[in-house]
Amino acid sequence: MIGFYNEEPKSDEDIKNKHQALIYKHWDGYPTYKDENGTEYGVIAILEDFLTKFNKGRGLTDIEYASARTLQHLCNMSDNPNDTYGSNFLGYGIAKEVNHTDIEFFYAVYPKAFKAYAVQRDYETRDENGEKTYPLSFSELHTIEIKEDEEEKGQIIVSKIK
Image (cartoon, rainbow, N blue to C red):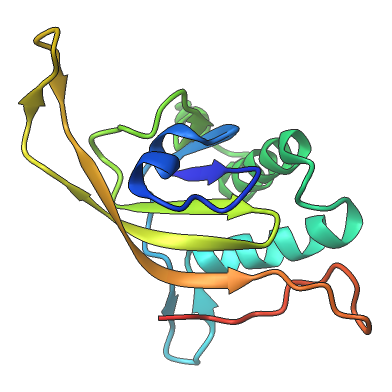
């Protein structure tokens, strides 16, 4: 799942509640991995490439467009023009809340950086109304900082932490 924020989320509660937009990514995939040739793949590589271009052209403070165009980009990458069974309609969507039972990784995008988190899910509990809940916690894996550099205004300068 990919969340878009006005500012960096400071806590698990901020991650769950302060998003401005959420993209659901089924089979959310590993944040990063390299093939035998050293080429980097995964959600971080996809987001880094796309958000670099978007930030340079429009700026990541425009959350409505950043989230919409990110979703479009992801769908374009996964669509198969020869699909006759409808699987093109699976994989990505718009979510209302973070608490999906099948996410393993979460990506928080905000104007200064984006972060990858591993998601830990506690066992099923019940809320005050008796509804099932699955409390989530987040462990930061990577941070890609976005810096304004005089030479390359608007470029994302990669600073992988952790």
